[in-house]
Length: 259
Image (cartoon, rainbow, N blue to C red; front, top):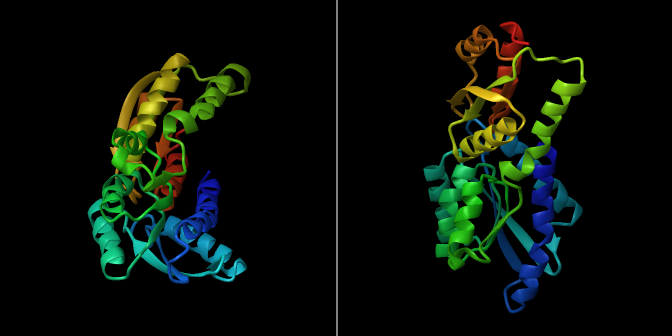
């Protein structure tokens, strides 16, 4: 899933051709800002976003058509306020003409207003929560300035829960009770993911007995996982946009004996 999201940045880069065609009188340099969490709790994801773009640019000779691309990196630090400041600085001080990428829905919710204010089109945004979609659709002023690439959880996770229910009915995994504990990051993305999980699981007869929220980059889940084990839940879920958080969660789940 993460690989596909990184590929959307590459696809978005190719769309710059159309922008160039629409502005034939412009100088032969296009200033492009790549937004991502290059430092902070999701820096590993940010590095993958950056490297995917640089790899594609190298293949293309750092050009689109007759235009040389001047790339600047906008570090969101996984924080909406810091991301907004960095985005405005890229426009006002560095002359950014086009925005690309992004990782967090909460960041997208804040930055989209700056794209509209400064009339800078932004493509390949991977902030996927339905709140982002709703905001873009809420006012015509957003049209043409924010192109979202990833489906919100209600669309993108449907097959996950179909498989969970199939496994409970047809595999060696036979949960004694169809109860589940949900864990998500405390962001627009995390809340939307849990919303979709609840709707899908309830449809298949699962009961949500716990719903918890943690921080991006959190790595201590022992108290939470011990609580789940004590409650005897056969199914737990997690979503977190920091790779270190998910890795820690899986490792600690095994350590506490959660099965």
